[in-house]
Image 1 (tube, rainbow, N blue to C red):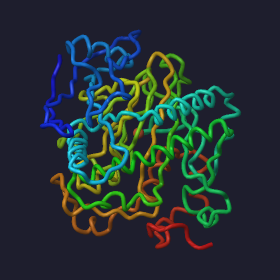
Image 2 (tube, helix red, strand yellow):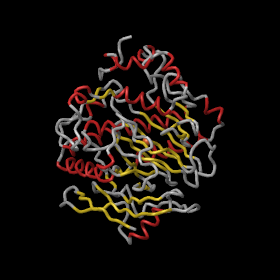
Image 3 (cartoon, protein in one colour):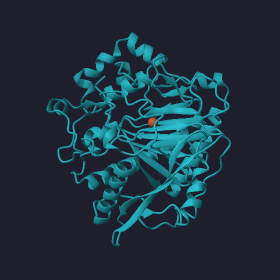
Image 4 (spheres, rainbow, N blue to C red):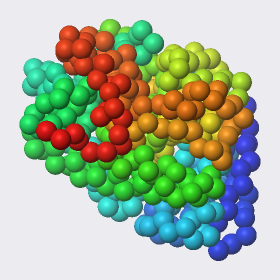
Length: 438
Ligand SMILES: [Fe+2]
């Protein structure tokens, strides 16, 4: 079955065009796999704000090619997303406003947008992917020592992360802010604050460069989102000063080469991410599924865990790999700030027939930020007045998510043993400011 979902796509300097996100439903049996090609897409020569990732051809053949990378055993619609190109700077021009509006529309329709990588991003992604492969190929004993008892940065073995009570097969290196033990926040035992236990400089340098570059992209996306939402400049970006940005470097084993701790074919169970934006890159293997926003599927991960949400239900969309793009989904804090006008994107990962590498960069509020919903934006599900006034402390939400995902990690045990959690409610942890005086 094939459905075609219309979406209005304004293009800079031209009249608004009608674009289409094309979806077709495919079920894969075991043994089907392939490599998704970009179908003539060329980020270097692209000039328009929104690009098609291919020349339009017969939907059945194109969707069939994209679908070939879908992990076996899954039934889903296959997305063929429009690709947006970001300007180098967002200055509030009419073109910026139109692009922001198009991004917001795409997030509200699909829950995900696709952004053309710049040449620089492409190069940084290639370097980071190589470093990731080299790290994950190390002996387990070399990787296992990359753990810190104060931060959640470092190595997470396949089967260590838990989503909705079931072990995930993802093997991860998490990068949070790399703070020296002498940093006043570390000395004051702030939850989640500590060093990043890098294995070596071969891993550290490309990852730091990649993260710094995506930090700038995250800010531009938030500025465009402000324009698209029609809210004042700074309504979103005021929270990302001193943002608690972090990255998950991910490897997924082939579905027939797991350690047996999780669920067959499941890489990561369904969940929503916790902050503002998640900017991801994936190799050519394929495994990501998302759910489109749906008012009938109301959830609020900060109130009640969305882990496991609709995991085995119909309605998932497969996001095939496309060379030269980032995908961007939304997190819990974007949903909270916009009163459900934009919603956090439920997603999950399936295991494919080959190992798969991906990088997910999280563009986040400050750890100390207390977020309040925007006055002028509402998806029709406004919170009670008391909850609005109280706000959400991002550091507490982040800590809750990591304690839930890693209940047996040394970091969680130390956090509990040293009673660090209670610090999250202290005034100095809720300032939006920098570190407290030492
Ligand atoms: Fe996620």
